[in-house]
Length: 78
Image 1: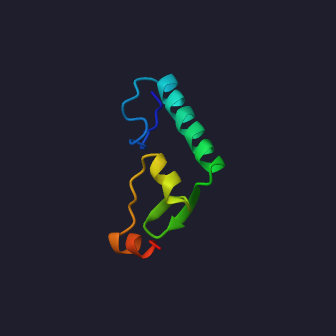
Image 2: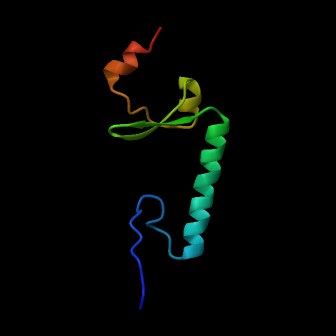
Image 3: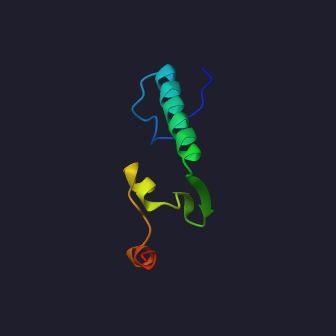
């Protein structure tokens, strides 16, 4: 029987069917579109893709954890 291996594991590892996977991806896509409309941006860096927002309060309102180094975070304070 022909097959291929699905290697993405973070978003769909607990899905039991293709429709469940589709629903999960649709939910994620809706969230990404909403984030883009609210000013979030995707930046490419040597260590991977970073999702950023210029306003720390908006970033925190989503409940995201800031992965920037503590030293860099302190330099952003006024």
